[in-house]
Image 1 (spheres, rainbow, N blue to C red):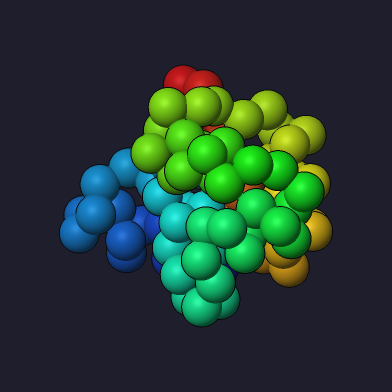
Image 2 (image 1 turned 90 degrees about the horizontal axis):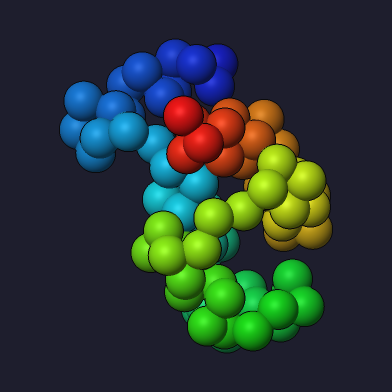
Length: 86
């Protein structure tokens, strides 16, 4: 399944894909806590929480770094980050 197809299937059920949503779902699917993800990424737990809740936006560069460091889809991270900016 392509990224575009996945997004098209998810949006009617969960709404527009935001980076925070992508980040939270990815973290949960990895089975790690916010603190564990913060440790993996070298950031504060509060920052992870703020990103997931949409209180802190991320740049495309940071979205790519987060995805690469955490082993997530860089394409989906960048795409959802760009959607946030629209």
